[in-house]
Length: 214
Image (cartoon, rainbow, N blue to C red; front, top):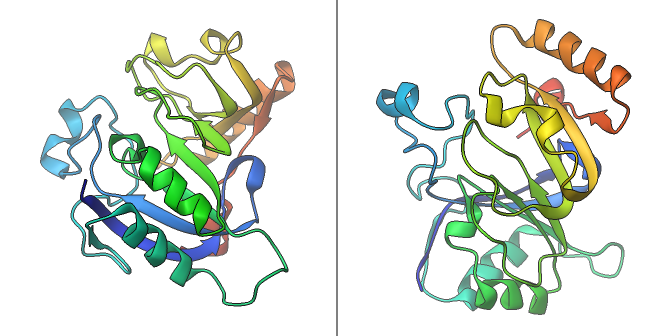
C-alpha cells in the first residue's frame, strides 16, 4: 500500500507515560473522526483536535510506496549515533491505524525502532506494537480495550467519554489530560481534583506546549 504521511520529525514525547523521551514522530495523514477541515469541526465526532493532519506537505511528509521506504524515512530522522538508546518512533495522526499495518510495523522494527502508537481506539490494533496508547474521543466506540496507556482528554461532555467507563479496561496506565481550550486553566484544576479523588488516574500535561517545542 501507499502510506500518506503528514510529517516526520524528531522531538521529545510531550505527553503520557513516556514524557521527555526522545522520539521520531511519524504523523499519518487522515482521521476517521474529523476531516481536519475547520468547516466540519462542529459536526465531527472529535471537535477538539489541535493537530494538522491534512495532506502530506509537512516536514518529512509525503507518500511512501513501500513499508521499507517509510521506515527508511523515519530512521533518517533519528540521530546517527548508535548504541546509546533504542530508537523510538511514535506513530500518530490523525488516526495512524487507518494505515499502520503489519508490513510497516515489521519494517520499523527492522530499522531498529521500538514502536509506540497513539490511537483513538476505534480500530483494532495489529500485533507487534511495543507501546499502545488509546485516547477515546467523544461518543466514538472504543474497540481497542487493552494496551499500555489510556489517555483521556478531560473534561468531555459526552456520556460515553466519562472516566469511570474506562477503568475496567485492560490498560497499565490511566491518564487524564486537561482539554486545551480557552478554559485550559479551569480544565486543569478539574483534572487535578479528579485524579486526587480517584488515584487510579494520573495527570498528563502537554509539556511540549509548555516548553514551546514541536
